[in-house]
Each structure stands twice: as C-alpha cells, then as structure tokens.
Length: 107
Image (cartoon, rainbow, N blue to C red; front, side, top):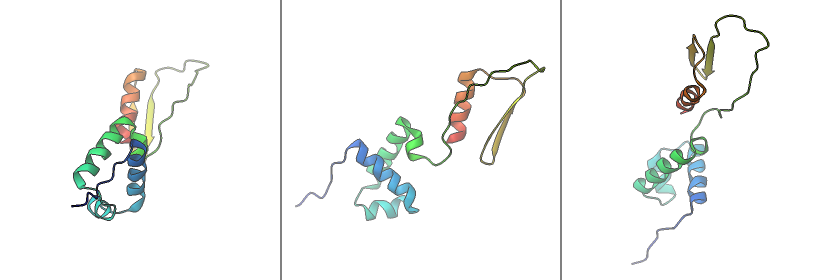
C-alpha cells in the first residue's frame, strides 16, 4: 500500500493556511482538495494561530503609537474602534490591559 501522506514544514503549513483563508472554501472542501485530513488541518490551524495570530486570522494588524500630551485637559477618556466594535474607557487603563483588550478585539 502506497503512503500518500506528505510531510510539511511549519512554513508550508502557514502557506497552506493562507491559501485556505483566501480560498473561500469550507475546511472540509479545502482539506479534500488538498489531500489533508481534517484533524491534521485543525491541529495546525490551531497551533499556528497560537504562535502568530496575525498570520492566519483576518482583521487589522495592531500597532501602537506613542502619544505625548502637551497639556493635561482633565480626566482622559479613550475609545478604541476596530471594525464595528468599539470599547470606551472613562479612565486610561494600564498598557498591559489595553494590549490584552486589543488582542482580543483583533480575533
């Protein structure tokens, strides 16, 4: 019996995930067409998302810009808008908390 399984590198799996995202197909359609088991595909999709979410998920890239206030104008408020979702903070949060919120919104 001939073994049709193909060994892929991490980079090849990342390329395959990009191709899947661009294909518009369901996972089942894509895996059948590319001769990949659904379980293996799911494993790699999950693994790559955990390593580098922006490589396999749709959505805006998150970047930070340092802002410096020239003059205090009273209590500061912050509204983040990503797509149709917005979050407003009446007081400025800690940077680590803000980074976690942005990462959650980008998913």
